Amino acid sequence: MSDYKKDLLNDLKNRPGYAAKYLTAAAADSTEALLVALRDVGSARKGMTRLAEAAEVNRVNLYQMLSKEGNPGIRNIRAILDALQLEIRIVDKRTEPNEVRAGRIS
Image (cartoon, rainbow, N blue to C red; front, side, top):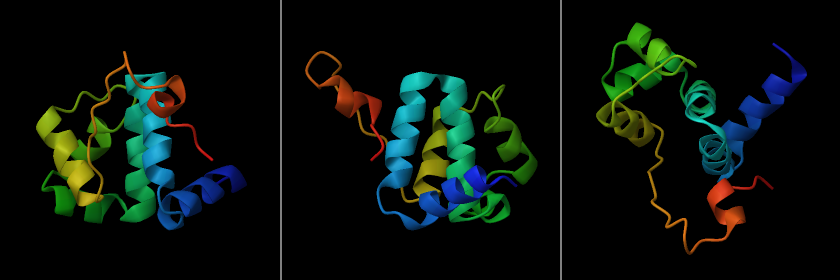
């Protein structure tokens, strides 16, 4: 594992708020980036086996869902986020500044 990946996983696990900003920035980029970022957060916070158990999904299916080619349903996304103690927030693109929508990481 690269130093970058180790540092990223450490930040996602130990820096309060970092995972939410990371996921928000990934979501602003693309669906594929969001799925991979969600896998990173899951790996950092729980490990994929424990995450699958907590979200009540099959571990192999979890890996498939959170790949670039994944296509998880909203119920699975919500279960995964809930297991990671995260939630979805809806932002009106017409009124929120771009920096808020893009989830700038600081």
